Length: 110
Length: 110
Length: 161
Length: 161
Ligand SMILES: Nc1ncnc2c1ncn2[C@@H]1O[C@H](COP(=O)(O)OP(=O)(O)O)[C@@H](O)[C@H]1O
Ligand SMILES: Nc1ncnc2c1ncn2[C@@H]1O[C@H](COP(=O)(O)OP(=O)(O)O)[C@@H](O)[C@H]1O
Image (tube, rainbow over all chains, first blue to last red):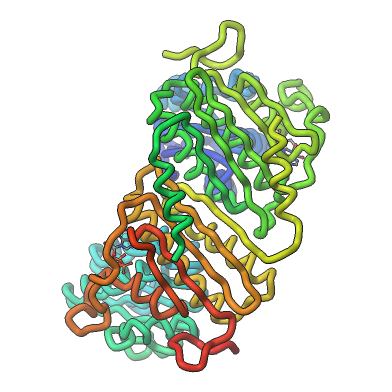
C-alpha cells in the first residue's frame, strides 16, 4: 500500500494504492492533516487503485471529512468500484460524502 | 521503521529508525539510489536509532557501498551500538566500511 | 532434530477437506498479510468473485482487527488464532483471541443518524452484514463466521458476477 | 459456536513450562511483528540482555526470512510454523516451512575475502554464529535452534551486560 499526492488546480488529490485498512489508515490521515495544516482546503481522494477498505478506513474518511469541514474546506471521493460502493451504501456513508464517478467530474465541480 | 534524510554540507545523512531487515531494506536502498542518481556522492547512514539489522540489511549496505563507489562516491556508517558492531565484526564487514563513532566524526572527515 | 514439526508440515500437502490455521502475533501489521494468505487459499479452491473480494476480505479483516485491538489489547504476549474450513458450498472462519470477551448485543447501530458521523463502531455491523452467519462464543473472545460461496436469495451483500 | 477454539485459548493462560506457537503466512511483512511477539514472550519470562536483543532477534529473523523466501518461495498458499520452548536455562526455537529443503552443508563461508563483497549469503552464517546450536531436519525444511540464556564460556556472541 502507498499514497501518492499531487496538486491539481488548488485541489490536493490523494491516490490510495492498495488497501485502506486498520494497519495503515494513520498514514493517510497524517498526510491529509499535514496538508490541511499547510493551508490546503480542497481534497479529493481517488480510489481507482484501491483494493479494499475496512471499517477503520471508513472511519478515517469520516473524521477527515469533519476536520476539513471545520476549517471551511471540503473532501470529495472518486472512483469507487462496485465493491467499495457497496460498503458506503451498507454503512449509509454514501449520504455523508460527495462521491464522484471520476476524478475529472470531482475536480471540475470543486 | 522509518528513514529520514537530510543534507549536511553536501553529505546525504540517512537516519534509520527501527529495524533494517528483510521486510524494509528495499526502502532504504531506493532512497539512497535516488539520491545517487540525483548527483549526490557523499552518504552517511546513522544507526543511532536502529534496533537491529539482519543479513539482508547488511547485504543492502554492501551493495549500496559498491554502487556509490562505482560513481566515485563514498558511503560511511556512524553510531553503531555494541550489538550492531558485533554483527559487523562477526561477518568481517567492519573491514569493508568506514565506520565512525559519531555523526560529527564522520561528517568532519568527509 | 524436530522431526515432529517437519512431518506435520508435509501432511499439509495431502488433499482432503481444506482446513487451515494461522496463529498470529497481536500486531495490526500482520492483518493484511494474513488476509492475503486466506484469500489466496480460498481462490486456489476456486472460490472467487465479490463474495471473496468484498465480503470475505472485509469481514475477516474486521474480526482480526477486533481480536488484536480489543480482545488482546495489543498485548505482545498474546496471539490470535484463525481457523478456516473450506467446504464445497461455504467457508467457515473462526477468529479467537485471548481476551476476556464482551457483549456483542450491546453495540449500537452505526447507520442511525446520530451515529453516522462517528469515526468508529462499524466493524461488527460490517461483519453482520457481509457474512451469512456470525456468532460469538459465550465468553465473547471467539467469533465464528460463515460465508456461502454463492449469494443466498435474500441477504445483503453483492451477487456474484 | 466454536467452544473448542475458545477453551484452547484460555488454556494458554495456565502456567507451566512455557511453550508457544505461531503459524504465519509466507509474507516478509509479518517477520518483524512475529519476532517482536517472540521477544516479548521471552522478556516476560525474564530472559533479556544482548543474548535476546542480538542473538535471538537476528537468528530468528534469519530463519523466518529463509523459510518465507526459499522454503515457501513466497507461495501464498504456504505457511511458516514457529515453535518455541522457553526452558529455565535456554530457549529452543523451531522454524518449519513447507518447502522441499536444501543442503545446508553446501553454503560457502561469507567471511572469505572473495565473498566479502557479495550482497547475500550471510543468513545461515549468522544463525550458526549467534545461536548455540542449530540443526536442520533431514529434508532441510525445519530448523531447530537453541540459545542459552547465559553466554557459554567459549562461544562467539556477546556476553550479557
Ligand atoms: N474480540 C473482542 N474482544 C473484546 N471486545 C470487542 C471485541 N470485538 C469487538 N469488541 C468491542 O465491540 C466494540 C465495537 O466494535 P466494532 O463494531 O468493530 O467497532 P470499532 O472497532 O470501530 O469500535 C469495540 O469498540 C469493542 O469494545
Ligand atoms: N528454508 C530453506 N529452504 C530452502 N533453501 C534454503 C532455506 N534456507 C536457506 N536456504 C538456501 O540457503 C542459501 C543461503 O541462505 P543464507 O545464508 O540465509 O543467505 P541468503 O539468504 O542471503 O542467500 C539460500 O540462498 C537458499 O538457497
